[in-house]
Length: 130
Image 1 (cartoon, rainbow, N blue to C red):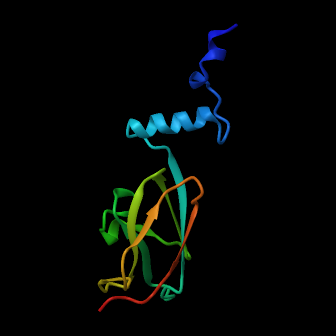
Image 2 (tube, rainbow, N blue to C red):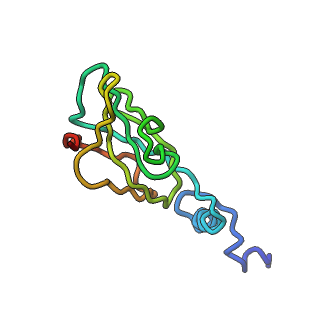
Image 3 (cartoon, rainbow, N blue to C red):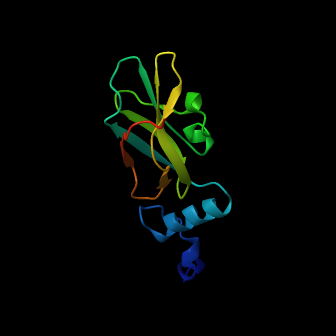
């Protein structure tokens, strides 16, 4: 009898949902190396002038660290980011018309917890503050 058969925690299988995959994710998380997840942000109801610059801005460097000029620029109504699995991010939409100031979306920050099942976030523009 192989010693491998008596040590299931050493399983090297990486099939989706397998013990080996879960162990690899847990190991990466414990080492601060969460696996990435591609997230699509889809915005609805944003200003539609061709000169408008619409972005997703939020916590963490992936979302611009709250600096609109560094946020995710929407192309059409979509922006994508690679975010760490189990990461938690706050974010909002911002809009800049021409050379005007950035206008922040009205209301509370949105919160995203990146999980296995999340691949798309739908956003609805609710107007700007001020």
